[in-house]
Length: 106
Image (cartoon, rainbow, N blue to C red; front, side):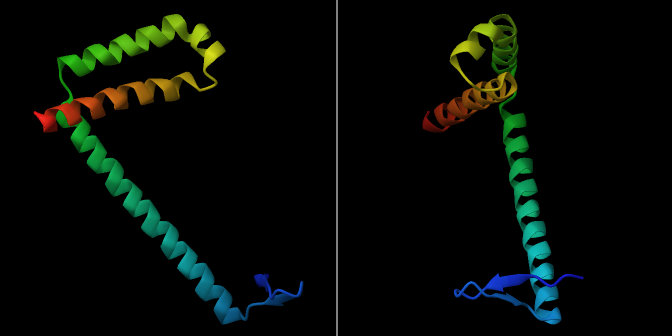
């Protein structure tokens, strides 16, 4: 296998030894797995909170924003350089976050 190299500051490439290269690879894999686990836990928590907020008002906003984007998609794309699916997600998550804020403040 090719050994990874690093620059020592004098434009000289110095190769890691075999053991150092494997330690770096293993640490990188562990770090990526750790980040993925944290992201999965955060997404699962967000899904739990979203399920608690799901009711008739949420369904109305979901259908309203979906129909609005379907009808006005071309007009929206002229003024906003964003994917319509991303816009749909932002609108619905924004409404849920506003409702969560208002529920906590009351």
